[in-house]
Amino acid sequence: MMNLETLTDFFMWSTLLNGGLLILWTGFTGFAPDLVFRTQTRWFHGSRETFDLVMYAFLGLYKIFFLTFSVIPYAVLLIIG
Image (cartoon, rainbow, N blue to C red; front, top):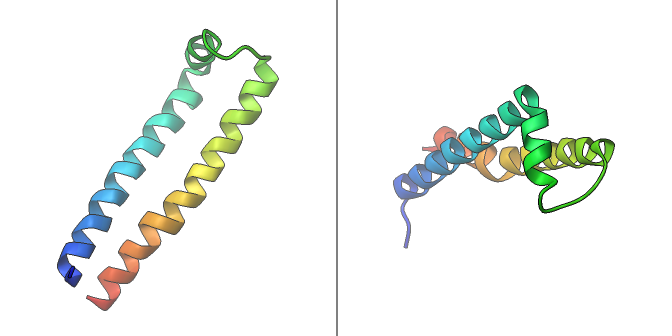
């Protein structure tokens, strides 16, 4: 059975890795959107407007999942630990 310390460590690393991925993804789509668009249109064809909408929706959904399944459980474990 897992103890509280192991669970807290798991959610700490989950929060750090997923937060880093979110920051990296936001940075690429924010500072180099043309590079990301050109890279993605090699495999998935579509308009720039559709690409912008999909990236915005995925970033928003990822952020919601990140907060719900990484940050909040980690904060709760820190509070109760």
